[in-house]
Image: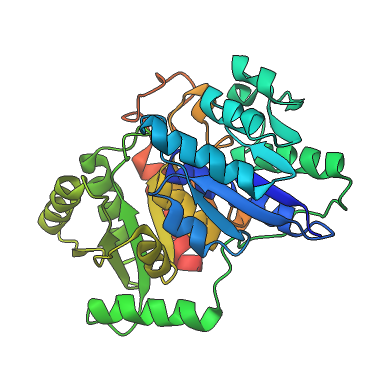
Amino acid sequence: MAQKLLVVRNDKIGDFMLAWPALAYLKNASPTPHVSVLVPAYTAPLAKACPWIDEVIIDPGSTAEPSAQRALLQQVKAASFDALLTLFSTPRIAWLGWRAGIPLRVAPATKWAQIFYNLRIRQRRSRSAKPEYQYNVDLARALLNRLALAVPTLPPPPYWPIDTEYREQQRRALLANLQASGGAVAVVHPGSGGSAVNLTVNQYADLIAQIHHRIGKSQRIHWLISAGPNEQPQAQALIRQLAAAGVVANPFPASDSVEAFALQLAGADMLIAGSTGPLHIAGCLNIATAGFYPAKRSATSLRWQTCNSAEKRLYFSPPPHAGETDMMSVDIALAAQAISLFLSKY
């Protein structure tokens, strides 16, 4: 019988997407384990679309009523998991795994909640010595070793594999929405979701205008501006500023779920954004990314690197002397030059 694993990454979308390489790693072990995940309702659609996940359990969250917490405990206990892998540890989840009687409980050796785990891995993630997704893979490897499962090599990107023909369908749909027949499709996400500092609307307008005027004569670029539920004002302001600069940009087509947004995004050539959920969705899809990161040590471009192929990954940060949240010192001209060269090539 397959080993039953419960993997927990119950925070933001970007964090969850950076768990996909670890999930792929687990599913490539031998014998193949049964992988369940515990995620909040807002990332559940992505979890259900993940090819490395067999079952999705909804976490009601720390503010849920006691009855909901008891129901979650009973559900986890009834599943008789062989192991729990918590990629980001919190006391509530640590206690849940212990009370559910899961025999092997694995987590980073951090915070007092580690007392509820019996395999604790010291990582010191705040030092940003490697990508977040690699820290997750390291935890998965420790779990497989303890369970005596054959440890695989990490599969290459994409970690969200999508059929080539389906990608082409999505691309044609994006172009049709623009009444265009060809050209590069670049998506810009100026929002931050409240989780990361980002460029200002003015900086994005300057960046896009410079890119557009650099390569506009040799290659047609279609600009789509995406926005989260509370980010429409930023997107509209950017579209207006670009129009004033002589650059046509359109809203990214509306979608009714984050999964639908991701599948549409699969048809784009590049996503330009801060270190947010959409950037890491694009990374899992293995489309090109241009990410903007702060100078903060725990939020570096290495730590929060996208998990697409290295040749499809561009990243930009303020100079080393800049403040942790000072994005105004990002060299927009240098970024525009690099992105222009990339788009001209691909």
